[in-house]
Length: 222
Image (cartoon, one colour):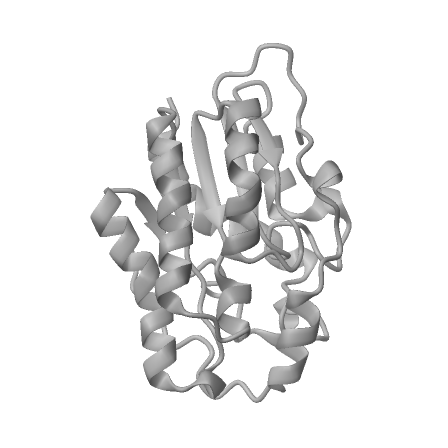
């Protein structure tokens, strides 16, 4: 069941500069993040995760991240390839995407990008165009798509925030793809589940993220 994006960041008194510094900087290399999480000689299906720091296990051990937990849950039934890079924008993801989808030939593509676009105040229209291109390439390659949405702090103004979050819903409707409206549902306002920077989830939060994703992902699995 799809849930609307809550006012999850409302009242969250975090410094905008903290968001910009910690999510925009790239902390991992694509050569590392594009490797299979669970190597298998004949995987079926293959899942490709295109994300930023929220999927790259920033600030925690890599094997504690929700993508690795997903690979463990699917062990023996699928191969999970994590192509997430901390600090990635939709533009950066799009630049890498054509080669990745050609090389990996995924059956399901999970797109978790856009947060850094919002934190930089980039155009929601351009963000939508970048995500749309990745969705179109996925569908042209015969892959199903799961779009993982995110929200931004209220500091950017309600009009921009509405335009930003509206991108995910518009794309899900236009391309008939599955949507997780807010990846950090039940996490973002819980200090116990957020790292000291107030931005990135802790290791304890990762199973909750996986549950948020799994609800929409499971129907796509054969």
